[in-house]
Length: 349
Image 1: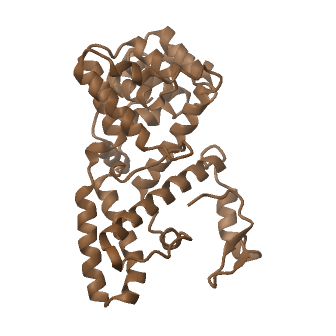
Image 2: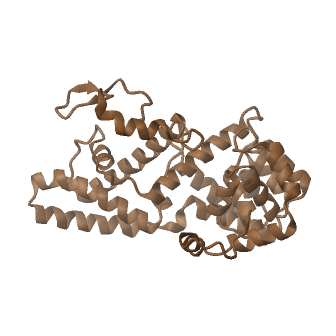
Image 3: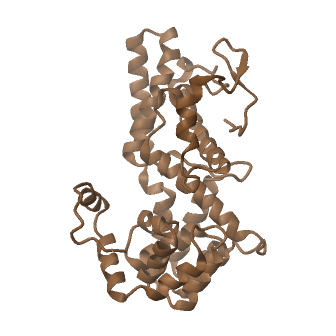
């Protein structure tokens, strides 16, 4: 499915064409909600297109896998993206963790492209340089990341999400939703109970193939930890990650050095000047390297670089230590404390 930013017309229920924008006051509730959204937080058209494209590709690939498992019982008449449209309209694709993953990949694409703009075309060979390492663990981990990243690019070099990138819970929710849409067609040719049995069998087979250990984030984690064990997770690696635009590697390295999870580090990386500075302080970066990272990402990371440097200098060691201890706690535990409206023990930064 190819996302279209400003569609001229949309397919009608009868297969014809109708105006893509519904006229009149029927649009007013959604228009009001959209009109007053925070322009800083709302999706850009590029992010929306990337997220829609990745989601459409994921749904299509899973529907194709179902078709293979179902064999002759499968239908091949979904060229118009009917499965995706049905799931979208029913709200079954609004899975919080899935949408979060789509957003993060779109953000990563934007930030990486912004950093690489104007840099030499060979500046992205960081990972390849580690494949020839004498440390076999580092070499194997680097190759695994290269292969994983390659699988997540489409034929136009756009970003993709594959089934293994999903958590187990999200994978179960998504494949069950897709199976439900397939049932609509399958039940026309088979008895409903037979269709249910065939789909349940295919669903079990598809879920049995799912492996969270193959997530791109898991490959990045393995590589960064292999570097750390080899004593190679130094300031030079952080500089190289920045220079090559390998944003995910940079954030994973900062997460490792600060003792936090990747998701928490990513939120701080894009969380504005003070949170960005806090991440760099928790990672024990020297001031000159922190400045390079702050000003090297200034055009694509939210926040003012001068403010970030001021925050880096002004944060007291006690504040940094307190924040580090708090953020190393389990995210569910921290979320529960916030839900209880308890500020006890939470850092002020």
